[in-house]
Amino acid sequence: MRILILSDLHSNATALDAVLDAAQGRWDLSVCLGDVVGYGPDPNEVTARLRELGTQTIRGNHDKAVAGLMPTDDFNPVAKSAVDWTRGQLQPDHLAWLSTLPPGPLATDGIVLVHGAFEDEDEYVFTPEQALDGLLESTAPVTFFGHTHHQGGFSYLDSHLEVLQIRPRPSERFAALRVEPPRRYLLNPGSIGQPRDGDPRAAFAIADLEHQIIEFWRVPYDVSVVQGRMRAAHLPEQLIQRLSVGR
Image (cartoon, rainbow, N blue to C red; front, top):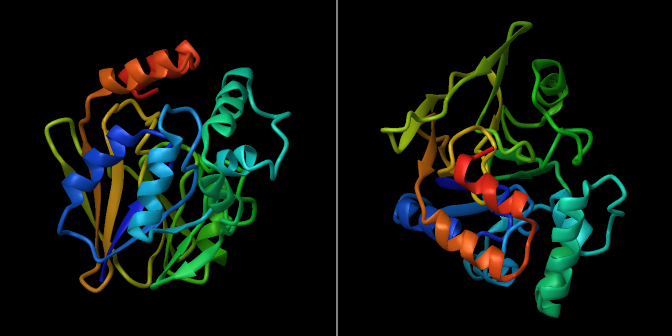
């Protein structure tokens, strides 16, 4: 069983299409770690694509905010404006689908899915200290999380916690991680729609736990086309510019 791991799509249909083209024929099941919408210009197209694929999806904070399930008081003004715009654009059936997405942690097919931290779906996990609870408390040896838009992760064995630097180099399409039981893993596939780790290429992962391999992918896409749609929608310029630099 090869599982396609998607996260933080953020209404970027062009990036999602590039990911699905690159992954074609390499996966049997797809899952999504949340933030289907927000920031980008294509909320209906991205939501429809996940629904067509039957992707098992948990909710992210932007999905909750757009669906009216959480306040946006803690959102910065740029993110809040994108939430408001997205809510006004979404078709009613897509909005209803977003509102019914389950929270993580969610166990499926031998892995666990969370959006943010294991105990708080809205908390960011950047440091080993923040990762420790998820590594210790998850019901599976391999847990995938999103929210930070940074590809990479953590592993834990015998009270030793390691930060994993597993992003492919600019000349590479993917970097592979060999899973070594009984080591435990908390892994982030990166963001498809708005990377923030300095690489503007769309990020995702493919997990083949039968063969103990997880591939971390990056694929280029036409950023300028997405930026044109964002400007036409009058989305904030800050969101438009950051796609070029992956920050």
